Amino acid sequence: MTGMMGARGVRAQQKAMPVIGFLHSSSPGPYALNTAAFRQGLNEIGYVEGQNVAFEYGWAEDHYDRLPGLAADLVARKVNLIATGSMPSALAAKDATSTIPIVFETGIDPVEAGLVASFPRPGGNLTGVCMLRGLLARGRRQLAQPLGPGRLSLRSH
Image (tube, rainbow, N blue to C red; front, side):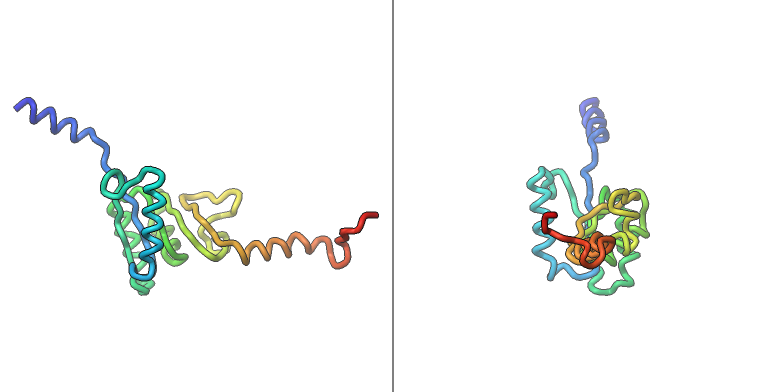
């Protein structure tokens, strides 16, 4: 009897496996390669599904109105992190929690979209990856504007 009580006490003290919630506005089929790559990347840094990390998925199946409920469900399940695969899912996750870390991927400016306050000081609980091609082009134009036409010269004087 004492041995069983001791085993229960040890199990009760073991840390629960972290859970990553994955939220996307689409369906799993078109994003199977992306989710596999995400899991592979985690494997490479030591997080193996079923061994030391679990996943919960929320797929809106292109019904954007489902995203707030799916995000709220992940929050209610007390996931440790929410990874999002689209701007609408990132916004839904942001609206659902201010405490659970959210990782996003986007092709548009996350500042203009309202995900983060600024690049140098994003604030809040969101971080992510942004494909900045358009943003970089705009930034280059903004840098060149104060110079004005004809003010930039590569000739030595």
